[in-house]
Image (cartoon, rainbow, N blue to C red; front, side, top):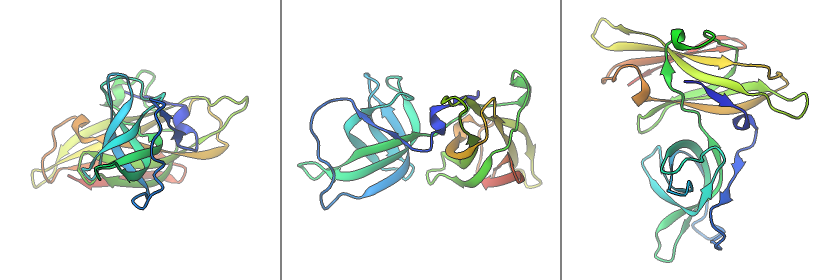
Length: 230
């Protein structure tokens, strides 16, 4: 259920490697504008990302397709933060020139009893939380303390546990979640931002309108809880 963090903790978004060597528009025309969107990115049979769907519901073709080390499975959908320029092809159809893409973690949701070694809530820095426009994800922007002693980033582990589901007086349900964080042996020299998306489809129950989900995080300033109405 937990996701190991190593490269995801580097402060800069990963630069993209094109899947092909064909020349392409630099995106410096009148339609070009730098954007950043949370997306579901889709790989083809060659494990190249060819298209994305933004949280706002816009489907965009990537020109050129790109390959990423953390997205190496073919015919798979990944959660990501995409930096891109909008461009137009010869027919006027809008496409996207990808510039950089950062992995967004989407952990499985389990109970604390299912975790080998027990629950861990090492502190993180809380930055923000929001529900995706399309209602598919509950998103966290956090920062973890990291650094190196010998030039190597030690892995940390992020996950999400479910503490229980209760029923409110009006018949709606409240789903309580907690962020799992294992600092491991990583030193705490500086902060590195990362994103976590809780997929609504991975909740332990199928939510109905009016149900609530709360997410608690242990931070360096104490426990922070954010509640969302679905």
